[in-house]
Image (tube, rainbow over all chains, first blue to last red; front, top):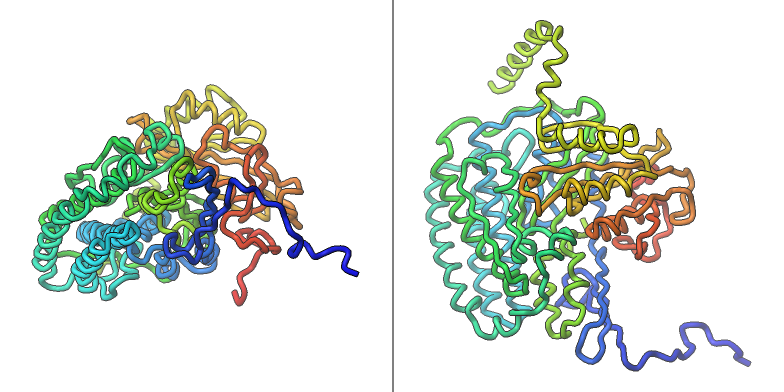
Length: 378
Length: 194
């Protein structure tokens, strides 16, 4: 009496050799994304990343709000790096509206974005540590990160989501005595992160797990259009702070960290070297910053673009180049805002890197891509 | 204070403008040389097939018809050394009945181009009632030329309904699997309550 079972109940013959494994979206090892891997024994034969579980439609929302009210929600993709996420948008709006930013505001922006880069990288490093089973490496960065978060709180009033950058400068001037506190904290922070080398980067267990896994050659890194630490770990000397300096990076001495190996180890070490570089940049910026002056150009209410125009601005964020394409018409709202984010661009490398890798190496390769699921989904 | 100085600036510029109005060629000299060179090379090769939309510092924008885009992209990669796509965006123009796809191309290998972004745009026909993948909203895929556009083009397909012919993997990327509404970044898809 039951001639045909519903499709879900009918038994299917499955391939005995290749197994499909869903990692995520609830798996703690994947962040808010799913990686569908096919494994033959212990080896990955195919991988299909499936992002989109935290897609919030930032770009659509931006079309309904004016240039200023877009600020708080556009920084949400990476709350730890909110200054850098907002940076290209603010630069783009400034070009559309034709605003010149005061010198002191430019320095404050550089300091804020470098602090944010460290805060983000520390968070990423903590996660990278815990997924390699190194719980000290979770505790230390998560604790030392507080130093800089306190600094950002002093500067902007908020611990994460600062909404500090506005077209025309920064929202508020620095609090009194900030320079001294900042210098002290950053010097101590630098001393602290140098200690990470002994416990983490020179650790034979980490080296055994990450050296020579997931090698991305220089040629492939370029061809796949990867960016940021992934690109620099594969031997391409490309950092927008140096190659296309924005604001006052031209006047600062920025050193680019490049490693040639292109393996997980190099990809995990480059962001750490970048943090040391950030400390040096902050010190320079504190020294060169004008001691007083305006930090913000007053805008007219509801600023508008002049006509159909488009700008593409990019900055170097914690995860690589972050571009913002803004199409404006003569309305107070942007016609279209597109964020081209480093995480999304680096994700394309994941299937290439995981193929032929052992399943146990998946976390080390995946997290070494400096990937932030929320940013990729926007 | 600052708003006052702004007004002053605007006034001074408006005072100067009538005097310099008689010299329009002065504007052409302002065009950045290097970027102009890139634009000239492209127009020299393709002539009327391409249209140089603007030349700004570090940014050159080229508008191309959908039939010529592959040829132009190959030229950009092989001769002008642009080796990857930074970003691919769609822009919906319902009044023109077209959807614009904008490729931002950059170069890692050529040091002279490291500041440059070449903006390559093309337009696809737009339909009022889209059936993504099964209507006339189609463009040739640039995936064969720039590998880096693979995920970006998938995103454009789901967000705007532009099908990329020749793309090996035209699946959904960010949207849920059971999404059955309009492609959400089209202008006629409205956010609730707005």
